[in-house]
Length: 464
Image (cartoon, rainbow, N blue to C red; front, side):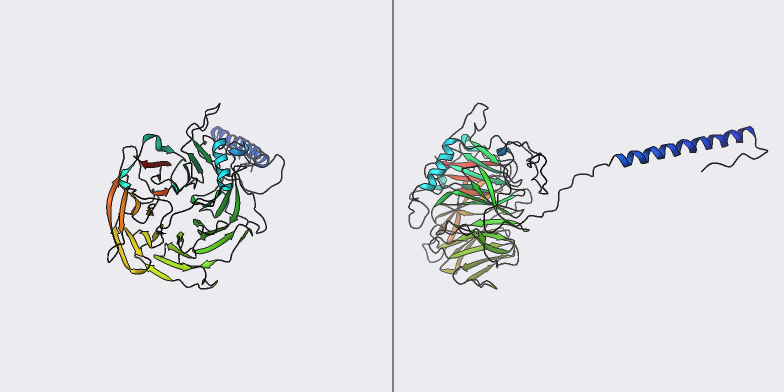
């Protein structure tokens, strides 16, 4: 707004001051017009925000290929996987924070996986997953060559593939990576990729909660994530097909010993069944008041399974008598804190649980009053994966992680009047530089024990 004309009687100083005010207001008005024109021509981009999760449900009629590793398709991390000019509203997964060493199996490993599915399943001895006569866990050793960083960051799930003539470790981490470590065969190509036998993929948008494969179908490698995804790896194409998507975290997977085509999974506190032949997911059974942390089937009675939950209970179920609404359990075991795992022994005669109440408990399946409690420091905190005690190749021993960067071996005796258990070995090594939290046994090689850490390393213990 222009200033009023100078009145008579103003001094020279006052007249000069009025002229300066008018000139400054003219300059400011011009600057405001230019700023308005620039703002209209240039829209400042808003800061990048991760979109809210809106995962479409997989069609029950067919498998949906929703996500593949960017690197297996030759797309650099961070770039869109959509073709130029395509009109799609799908959200690409976040880029991997680290560049994997390679994402292609060696020809020998791929051949082993293909041959394993065509071969007849190996026979198993009664009372164990393989012959373990004379096995002494105190004779296990860790060699420097059997330590490998398989994935970056914390490992939440680890498995050894059920291959009779090979040792392949599969590990999933909190970033969504899945790494394969081919222990027996080192690969060398022109670029030097895979020289350490590690092959890494990025199939999930969230932490990999579990990885399973049935001994009768080792090519079918299932994985789940806290982002509500279940993927099935296609060995031939080396990609991951999403077979189920939901709005709740999936923490654990399991398969019945007599059913390689069925996959049980915990979607929050519900149990669901995916039938691969039908490509469908069953109506959920609401089994717990909080999330389910483990599902395990009894070897000699595959219709019986156990679930552990954050609701402080372990429940035993029978699939033959489970109702769709308000299913009734065979037995409920109550604790003071959340339970992380409940696993049957190889014979199915005992059940071992690991709880945040700092205990490992062993139960006699014929008489639940016959049990034994061992104190064990399970307070791993927020930066380490929780401990889960697993059985050895027979009913005699349990393996569980130790906060002192070692493995506790628990000896179990069911031969007396009552069940008993005690610590009999403390496996430590200068090469195990981190706390082993999760474990897996080789189902056909007695003495091959894989332990995974929160730094992405896998430690493979073998016989001396």
